[in-house]
Amino acid sequence: MTDLKLLALDTEDLDVISAHVQDAVVRVADMGYARGDRRFALLMNRFDWESGKQNRRDKGQRKRAALHFDAVQSVVTAGFDPNSTDGVLELLAIVFQPIDGPAGIIELQFAGGGTVRLGVECLEARLADLGATWGASNTPTHAID
Image (tube, rainbow, N blue to C red; front, side):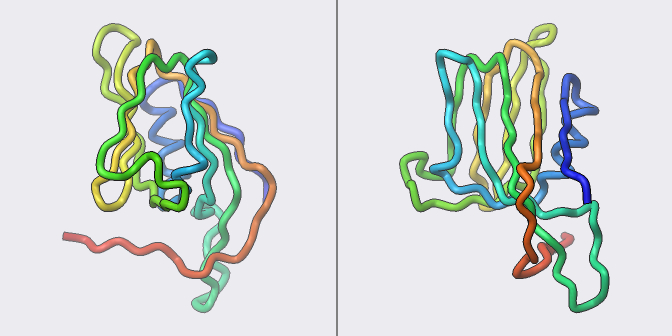
């Protein structure tokens, strides 16, 4: 199984990254904004959707991954305590809303309604697996309304 290394420079690219990180588990303490570098980064345990399940009892795999966004001008969190070092969030999707030319808002949407909104000069995101892989304790499921 090869490690992912993806770059997003437009909304279609970001949709691909969003699909790969759907149901990733993120500790609040593993997210941060480096104002001087204008970078927002997070570490996650992403569910490896592309590997598929080998049989009915197989619950899939998780991989350690890093995701960062460049050209970040502002960060606004809502729906969770950003100071909760023990807090854990489940990432559902990442979307981009253009505002003016290449500038816009990147929104990380978490289960339970939590969000991180990044004001960016332009869309530039990078996802990289960090090598560690292990059996998932369960396969993520979603209720269909």
